[in-house]
Amino acid sequence: MIGGHVNDLGEPVVVVTVDAVDWVAVIDTGFNGDLELPDALFVPLNPTFWGPSRWYLAAGQVSREPLYIVQFPFDGQTVRAEATFVSGDQILIGTNLLHRHRLEINFPARTVHLERVP
Image (cartoon, rainbow, N blue to C red; front, side, top):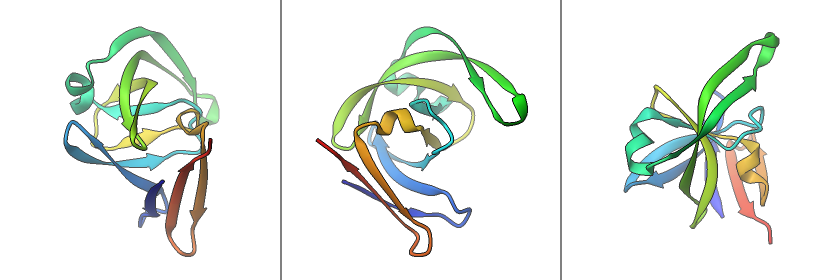
């Protein structure tokens, strides 16, 4: 189980450790992919180029970015995930990465619980 909190911006966040560094990861329930990662994780994760991707955003916007496959440490396991890399210092976790998890966000209590379901 992964515990987290709702930050001051109202975002559900958890901490993930990648290459011995703790990173804040926002759980983005509006993102149906796996991961959006900071450029700083490109070398440590040694991604494999998968191909071009197209993401449809609000207001009809389309984003085109290179898509990579990474081995990502998550919930005590290393999982194969699709990822894009962007400037910045936070990780976005999309709902596809959570397909084996139950997510509970309690906004009034500001708590986040993520539990793997067998």
